[in-house]
Image 1: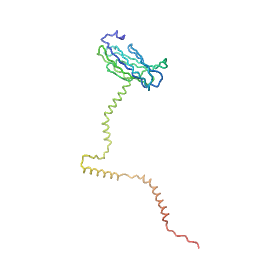
Image 2: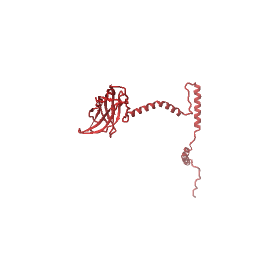
Image 3: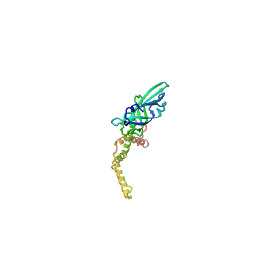
Image 4: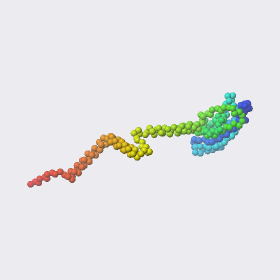
Length: 260
């Protein structure tokens, strides 16, 4: 029982069982030493085992269970009930350094059956996130109260929820957009042959397609650039042919007269 419950009537006090599991700390650089956590909530406190860094991760899976008394305000909303977790690094068993801290309001989780989220660390110079599993269930006291809005400023898992919702919405609209794109890409002049038509229809359609193809080939423009490029080769081949003709078929000429 907390000290504040002695000054608040029982009609405005609700008791809850808190089940907390400190799962892991990820994105940890390959540092030396051991990592552990210290937690505190309404006079309850404890320490997790010391664990080294493995594959840029520190995994504890440390379970905590204890009751808490949360008063109900005059406006009918649960008062804050803070759980503070501090992450420490121990080097050579005598040097201890603070890596980061996290403060969670347990009153925000009173109506949730259970929540597993990843949180950004406060007072942390590293890009680490802490994974917690929190369950807050009421044991006694009035249940006519409202729960404060969940603070999402330090929650990382909500980014994944947004991505998942956007992906589902995108998948729902992709089939229709794909059909529209395919219809827009189909050429307007292409004929579609009905497979259920008669043989005469097939033959007529084939003849018309062949006629259109031959007409389109006949109307293709001639690239004069290619012909100009071939002109030097044509002149060279004619010159070579003339040389061959002169060698094997010389033109008749008068023989020179002998001197007398």
